[in-house]
Length: 332
Image (cartoon, rainbow, N blue to C red):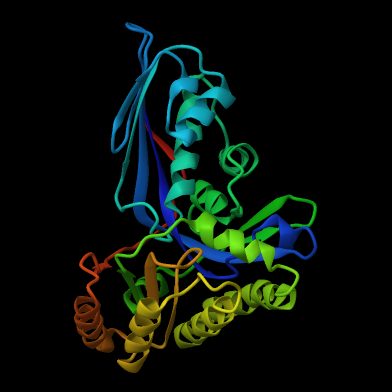
């Protein structure tokens, strides 16, 4: 049996510049961190019956991977060429489509597990590359590379997407006291609204030429955010999140909606210094940076607004930062 896990992530600035239509012409950059919420894959050889069994929110049993309905499982098994029976199950600390990169974390953990099943130990770089190949090249999803690299490497990083297609991952190290302070200034809320990243990014990709200068500013802002982080300027980082969110909303009509805008404005009005929607947009999670003494007031205001507009699944997610990337937790 093999158990792997890959962390979810929070991106601060630069998200969206990791798509090929942009970084092939100008380096894309993102600064992001992984958090202590994970996707898990459990796999086990099924030599007794030779069947292929998948367990996620439903169960599939097949004689060959090509028979599966779950595209990501199916294509991963076919790509790696697993030709013996196997049973695979997936679990996650948070639901999918929250803007925390869970789909790519799933792919990273899955590829790590399947290669281990074949007796192959792959590096963090190889785990990220194989997940990108699965999602972008094989499944043709209109997404970028940031989530796969963030989840595979783990920690707080500046990730650069070079014009030649290579990716550089630069770790950023925080003093442990500042790390705790930074964590205490962040608030993460699941809006209760979910969406497919591909549907939002598809519209963005069609408008790359029209918004090219905005993307350049988004990419370059990563370097400024890094400086503020190293200078421990939390309020300055919050203001940059706000600026980045205002830019991002101009890229596609589906990035935001009226409910998200009202929640965001409520948080700012009640003391948040800045924030953003996480992921491609259109729902998922909202991140705010706010002084700790204002957070109770912010949470009460957002809870009341969510109840008013009928967001029954709206809730705060408490989290911590983590330095771990994709790991094999058990292999026997």
